[in-house]
Image: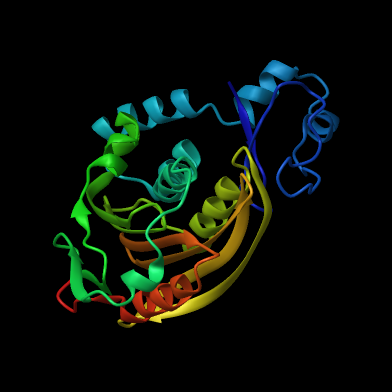
Length: 278
């Protein structure tokens, strides 16, 4: 299976034939489509195009791992072979949680009760990530379990915590550190997360806004929006913070019909902090 990466939105398009011309996500025309490439390489075949231009995830990851066993880390090698480990891990983070939220079904426990509960500082392992929340968060290995073994070789550590209030409110914290020289891209990861969310089966009326944030002196992106699923409207917030090889993330999803949900989410977002020792 081969993929062609869109230079505009970063989406990986499966190449099923030589007639793929536009990105299936953003509809931008490819500059390196087979037809355009063929004009510059008339003697070569479609099979040559797949091997030289397109991405074969399984093969490229295996080749990268073998190369790194013999040579020092190379930024160019990592970028070429794995097409952004950081980008892929951030997609796993939000896609897994988002999918879980979609499967919960009917709502319960009004959020008017949650906002009145005692709020406490919640920490995510040793990464220094903290939030204030009325929901108790517990450690989980789900994020690491959903990352393939080859990609794990480029990850120095993962810490995740999540909590929920019935089926009406969910919050999760993730902290991921990457090995030296893995190229991290804040905007690329943010774009990938949104593309993954809006492409989920059954999702409609997807809308979001994005803004730059700064938390504890570190640069980040805040995505906020809404979508419909099975007749219900959801609201979500996704805060992604990056410093060098370390990333932090806080995701909040709640029933949009619950007015208290927005107040709770805003208070949690305002409380996000990263300890100075990290």
